[in-house]
Length: 144
Image (cartoon, rainbow, N blue to C red):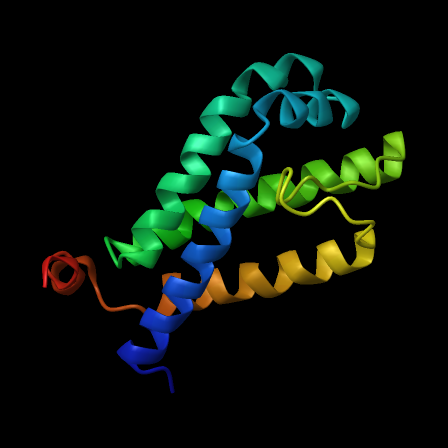
């Protein structure tokens, strides 16, 4: 049902999403740290640079088709953590800003839209994880 070409497109699109998200946060890491505190995870704000680097790295791996299956798995885990953190911040602390794109997109996007977008992206990542060819075949594809 899913050709390798379509899976490559999914990986590239998901990768671009993660790159844009990470770069947006990189532009103002301190604002991202503050948002983490507003979510109710004050001590974890020290991890904001690590989160940004992980997001950009996973995005580059998926966009450049470097081990996209493994990168998609880690990106899925990261997205689930982000979504749960946003849900907690929204329902417990009343934080409406998901901070998904850092300073690049600070419009008043509805939390519902953020959740729907994350579920769609999570579905795409799961498709990549489940359907992409085994690692042996994908390790050389990015070198071409």
